[in-house]
Amino acid sequence: MLTRKQHELLMFIHERLKESGIPPS
Image (cartoon, rainbow, N blue to C red; front, side):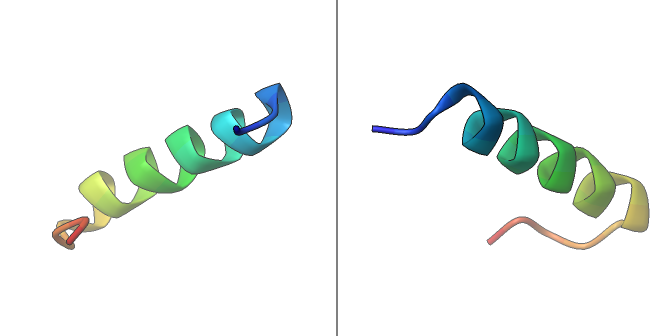
């Protein structure tokens, strides 16, 4: 189970990856 902070961090990283054009896979 992710904590709120961990979830926010994952979402932040995911957004950064999309901006960089790098597939999240």
